[in-house]
Length: 313
Length: 313
Image (cartoon, rainbow over all chains, first blue to last red; front, side, top):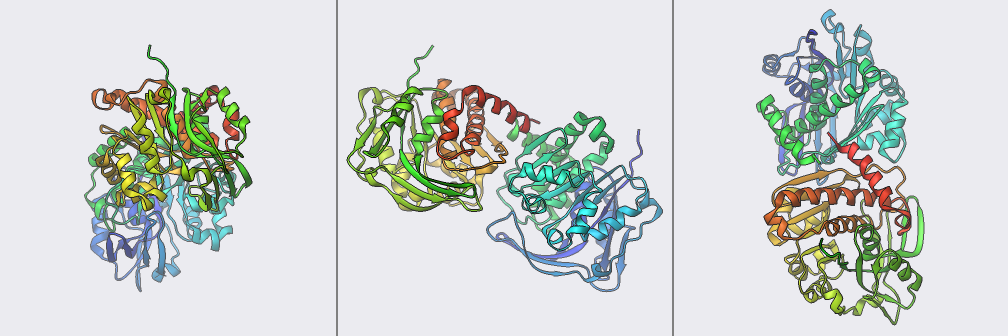
């Protein structure tokens, strides 16, 4: 039996102000590692590396602790928490950023504790690729690294982004960004081009249309769950990644499987993606992390069983 | 052993002039029943009810005959063949119509021969819903009716459209049009609303993202095949329907199965949709019906086996 170490995750803890066809939410809890850790903690303990301002509610960190999320790596810095303002109009697959106030994130320079340095599974959520590198540099013996990114860094910091992409095993990226990063017009070409950059497994997120997963030895297409009452798509991708990485960690996945036991890896990553898909379907049914607060592993499993019926041939 | 009757199909035989990111094709063979019959004839004989002008190549009708397509119901009228001019830009899921010249279609008034009136399976391809009704009126003992339509009729002839929709068993319709027709914003709500209009089975086409199938007793989500070299999406939906209806006819499907043997119907419609999905993936790899000319049932089956691997969990 292997020891269950927390997944080390780095990324944003934030306030979001978001407007969707279903309504508005002002100054609510958001940020990639917030969603990620809410989802992943249903599978495996998580440690967060992040920075928040003095305005961030201490009781939310306490709440995360009750879920098995270690927040000792969350710095509280003088100033305000990162604040994202965005909206979704007709296309729920794509947010329009109206305003980004980096605030305390502007000078974020993460220093890992010895316990964090000893992490086995690492998730680098969407954030400045230089920060992603800085965190990974400090992890001494990682066995599996996954990451996410976004168009902002593809456009603005491509060299730094490519440097960190070269070091990860699993890249989660949305469809449009995969095509942009690879400068191609088809998903399979994009997967090949991105694999040449480093990651052996590429998970391309297609919003309400599901995902396409490319490993060195297989391709897997998964639709998304049909949801009638989409309230707010924010965090869908981060909670998807949370379930994927959480499930991989829970099953003690190791990067050597990708080469040495490809069938085992392929089967595991499929199951991980199914969990991610169902997780995201819950996230979008309420604003902020509100739906995830109530979600249990049992409810997720029930959703997974129902979903498998929809896609089984 | 039941007798194999041809599928009766009505719709357009046309010339298309189309421009896509991959190139241009001018005045090539197109039209919904052209694509439909090319696809369906790999499964079951087909009869076409349509009208063409004197400029339509006689040798194409001869060619269709060699594929088991009965063209005795294709009238050759004085004047020019229907001509559609359209283009695809970045979004390959949606054509922009630049020009439509109805020509001989303007006065199309189909009269069915006794043999055609005795058809068992009917496919009403996208065309004026009054013509769809007129054809169905003449079929005396149909056992399964499928149809397709488009936004043009939803906007322009909704009452006539609803009249014919009320009489069909299987409606094939694309995602955007399903939402428009049902005035809802979710696929499952759209399926429920459309079922209340009449058809018990609704197949919602989602372009490169696959399809969602709703029967009274099940929902099935199928991704589409990933295609690197999309040349021209024209005819994807019609050839998809050709394979679906062809496969249903080949398996002697009857509308009473939907109520009396729902598990049999659900399994059959899933397999039909898988065949349709793979068929469409071939269609879009060349202009006009050119890829379908070369496609064999063996090649389609091979494609189907490969596709099933991509979606199997």
